Each structure stands twice: as structure tokens, then as C-alpha cells.
Amino acid sequence: MKALEFSGVCFSYGESERPAIEKLDLSVEEGEFVALLGHNGSGKSTLARLANGLLTADSGQISVFGRPIDGKNLFGIRRDVGVVFQNPDSQAVASIVEDDVAFGAENVGLPREEIGDRIGFALRAVGMEEFRTATIARLSGGQKQRIAIAGVLALRPRIMILDEATAMLDPRGRREIVEVVKKLNEEGITVLMITHFMEEALLASRAVVMNCGTVAMEGTPSEIFERHEELLKYNLVLPRIGYLCRRLREGGIRVSDTLDIGTLAKEIASCVS
Amino acid sequence: MRIVVNHLNYIYNDRSPFAVQALKDVSFTIEHGEFFGIIGHTGSGKSTFVQHLNGLIRVPSSLKRKPIKGDMTELRVGEFDLTSKKTDFRALRRNVGMVFQYPENQLFAETVFEDVAFGYRNFFDGKPEKGQVESAVREALGIVGLDYETVKNVSPFDLSGGQKRRVAIAGVIVTHPEVLVLDEPAAGLDPLGKQEIMRLLHRLHGSWCKTIVVVSHDMDEIAENCTRVAVFAEGTVKYVLPPRELFHHSEELLSLGLDVPLTAKLCLELEKQGVHIDCDYTTEDFLRKVLALGKGGTVC
Ligand SMILES: Nc1ncnc2c1ncn2[C@@H]1O[C@H](COP(=O)(O)OP(=O)(O)OP(=O)(O)O)[C@@H](O)[C@H]1O
Ligand SMILES: Nc1ncnc2c1ncn2[C@@H]1O[C@H](COP(=O)(O)OP(=O)(O)OP(=O)(O)O)[C@@H](O)[C@H]1O
Ligand SMILES: [Mg+2]
Ligand SMILES: [Mg+2]
Image 1 (cartoon, protein in one colour):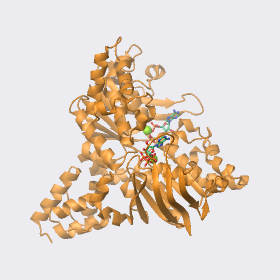
Image 2 (cartoon, rainbow over the protein chains, first blue to last red):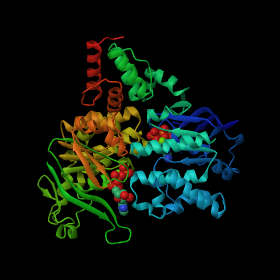
Image 3 (cartoon, rainbow over the protein chains, first blue to last red):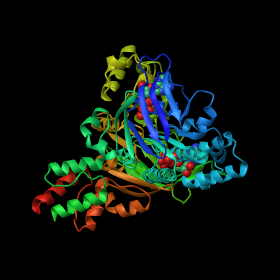
Image 4 (tube, rainbow over the protein chains, first blue to last red):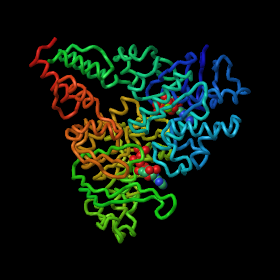
């Protein structure tokens, strides 16, 4: 079943002459883990806002689990599609952490005890249990970002969209969040992860590159990274390890195109010793 | 300007049930001319520390009188003594430029020109002449790599993420600060945008801003660019070392929950395979050393 489907979608902000999304076709199967890449301004966040009905397409159709978004079913759509938006400062709706995390879940009318459990689960998942009763304004940038992620986790949506949700986290925080997301995906939640970290894209089953409001490249992450000349056109680069492999080969050390550190080390070792 | 920090403590909401000690007895020195990196996990005190450097957070006078560990707090940026109430903080801010996390959120003017000009007028003693403002703005936009004629009348909101970031930086460096402090300047930029910002910082370091202090979570960036790095952990400073020494402690850094550059991870893995690489952890040096081994040994 298709979890999310865009067909021929166009969208422009207000008076601006250039559309932010132009004739976009994209479909995501239930249970997929898709990484969405693309340069600044290529339309990724706009796509996320369209997917949960925050913005309405000018033309074309967007369906969630087979139901076209039509303005009357927005409540159900928001329950199915949870989005962690880009800037955590603009997302907090309550001043205390647990109220903020509960907000989404309360809005869809879950029973009280259930909400309590979910807050616990979500805060544990992002490593912020001890901040349950803290004031959001007093958190660091990365801590606020974790709270925003917990709010969507508590909702347990069928589709989770993360819009650069890890941009302000430290490397361990990023790894932890990505692991939680990966686990939720294994449990069946469909994931669309917007990211500028090429390393994160490697975890996805499929990568989609956006350019000027439409899909420019599509394939498994390793297929995408084989086309590095083309990637450069879209402001993207190889993950650093891919770049190293290329330079090593140019220097006469015959390593494969691996994106795994352990494998690369073994290959180098067998070549130089 | 040399930055000297001794026994610096900071407590948010001091003497309230919400007190959080964000800095604990922090001491180190940043030399004039350094490209200094600050790393550490979320909430470790990095932003709290850098906000001290231009007086945005002041050393509370109570701390000065009653030092926590009995040692006097010292915080100096060049000639400026930041623990003194008499310090001219406006002059300090003209000399210490500060670029916050996501600085483009603070762009406000209708044109790029006005946004950058604001930074200049704000720190000018008296009223600058029109020609002065114009040449300062032109110069600042030039050094961040934007074409003055093309962008001056554009609304900052119509620019791409990377361009907005550069306008925000231009608005800070327009006064030629000697010290430039940036809190995660490349966060949220696409990969090419990131590379451009790092190149820009190098250009600045060679010209306008003698000392650069940069907070970053990107260890590869740190290894490639910094003279020395301070590692923050829970409000204290664990190490202050040049990258080539710091990443000798890779295993410990990893156990602190921090990351290390790809080159350091590869060195660790290679060590397990019995191959020892002694490099400074920049990509180029790593490649050079590995390729040299390849030539000496038997290339397959
Ligand atoms: N609220 C808005 N009003 C007007 N134009 C907008 C608005 N938000 C985005 N745009 C424009 O729409 C286009 C697509 O923007 P979008 O935010 O979707 O890009 P993105 O791929 O998410 O970029 P980034 O990687 O920087 O987050 C850009 O040209 C942008 O300037
Ligand atoms: N305004 C505030 N009031 C109270 N506590 C605060 C405030 N700002 C930060 N803190 C706390 O001080 C500590 C240090 O925060 P700081 O913002 O300096 O961290 P950081 O290292 O910059 O983190 P990040 O990488 O997430 O930006 C954290 O525990 C944070 O919760
Ligand atoms: Mg975006
Ligand atoms: Mg910070």
C-alpha cells in the first residue's frame, strides 16, 4: 500500500513567481525509510508541510494511505502524518516539557493514562526523561530539538517526517535519534527523513534528491552516491568516506567503493602490508 | 587579542530551585591569531561560554567577590577586563563579533544593504556619512562572497539558506572585529554551502578577523581547520589541544559520547589490522601517509 503519494503537485508561496514545488511526483510505500536530500531552497520543507496538510497544493493530488487530502479530513491526516519541523524554537506550544510533548497526543483525543505512558516512552527515546518538568525556554538548542522530536514520537503517527530534526544535535545525539527512528521504522512506521548529512542517508532504503521543487534523482543510497558528478550539480557531495575511497584509488590503492569504515580499513590493510 | 579565562563559573537562575550550573571552573587561554574550535555534547555549556566573550552574559559581581573555589575569576579579551563594571562593553562588541546559531533568523531589514548597514551604524560613534556606510557594506558583502550590485536591493528573505547565512555574517564583520565568534556557523546548510562557509572563515582569518572561535559538532571540520580545540563536558573543560594530539585520545572521546573525524576512526580500525598511521588527522595528510605506505609495501 502507498503511504504517501504526490502526483503532479504544484505549489507557490503567495505572489512569488517561482513555484516552490513544481509537478512533483513521488510515492512512498508503507514501511519504507526514505531519505530526502537536496540543496537549500529545493522544496524539501514545503513538501513536508504539504504532506500533513499545513499547506494546500495549488494543483495535483496528495494522498495519505489512499485518501486524498481535501481539507475535510485534515484531522485524520495530521494523526497519520507527524512532522518534526526544522526550527525547534518555533515549535514549542507549551512552556513545560511534558505539556509540550503531550500536546499532539491530547489533540487527537487519546485517554489520559495512555498519554502519560507515551510521554514517558517519548522522553526516554530521546534521552530527556529527567527534563520532564523543566521549562523549555531554559534548554539548550539541542535539548529543545529533542523535545520537538519527542512530541511527534508521542503521537505515534503512521508516517513520520523529520525535517532536519538532527541538525543541532551533537554526533551521539544524532546517532541516538536516528537509531530510534530506525527502530520505529522496523516496527512498521513509514519514515521520510530530510537531511543534509549524507552519512544519515546511508541508513535509508531509498534516497530521493530534490532540485527546484521536483525529484531530480532517485535510487538506493549507494546508487545515488555512485553518480557523484551529478550530485555536485545539486549542491551535494559524497559522504567523506566515498571521497577518501576515490582518492585512494587514484593514488593506486585498490579499494572498493565501500561506505563502511571497518571494510575500508581491512581493504587498506590488505593492500599496504 | 588574547583571550584569557580563569576560574569562570556560571549558574543560570542562581539561588532559585531552577539553578543550573552551566560552567564550572573553566580556565584556558586562546592566543591571538588562533582558529580555535569548541566541541562538546548538547548542553555542555558551549553557547553559555561563548556568550561571555562579548559580554552578552556577564560575570555576576557576587561571584567575583565570593569566588566558588577561592580563586579569583578572570576573563579578559585583549585589553578588556570583562569582570569589571567599568568596561566599555560597546567598544568590546565592536571588537568581538558574534554570529549566533541560525543567525538568519535575526535578519529583519527590507534589503540586504540595510541589514548589513545596520551592523555598521550600530557601532559607529556618531553618525557615519553615506559614502562611508556604502563602502563598508560593499566591502563586507564582497568578503563573504556576495556581489554588491546584485544583492544590495534584494530582500534577505528571497535568498537561499547559504546566502542568508552569509548576509548575517556580513552584518557582524562589517565593523572589522578582531575576534570573530561563531556558534555552529554551518548547521543546516547543504554540503556545498557548508564548504563555502568554511572557505569564507579561512578568508576572514587571513584578513579581517585575526582570531576565530568556532563552536561545531562536525569533527571533520574541526580536524581540517583548527589550531586548537577545547572539549567541553558537563560545564567543564576536559582538554585543550591541537587536533593532531586531541584525536590521539579518540577512544576516550568516543567514550565521552563525542565523535571523532573519519580519519581518526580509520586510524583506529587500521591499528586493529596492525597498520599504524601517524597523521595530523586532516584528509590530505591521512591520504599522503597511507599512499606512502602503499608505495613502500606491496600494492595489490
Ligand atoms: N514562508 C515562505 N514564504 C515565501 N517563500 C518561501 C517560504 N518558505 C520557503 N519559501 C521559498 O520556497 C522555496 C523552497 O523552500 P523550502 O523551505 O521548501 O526549501 P528546503 O529544501 O527545505 O531548504 P533548506 O534546505 O534550506 O531547509 C525557496 O525558494 C524558499 O525561498
Ligand atoms: N536560559 C537558560 N536558563 C536556564 N538554563 C539554561 C539556559 N540556557 C541554557 N541552560 C542550561 O545550561 C546548560 C548549558 O547550555 P548551553 O546552551 O550552554 O549548551 P550547549 O553546549 O551550547 O548545547 P547545544 O550543543 O545543545 O547548543 C544546559 O544544561 C542548559 O539546559
Ligand atoms: Mg527546509
Ligand atoms: Mg549551543
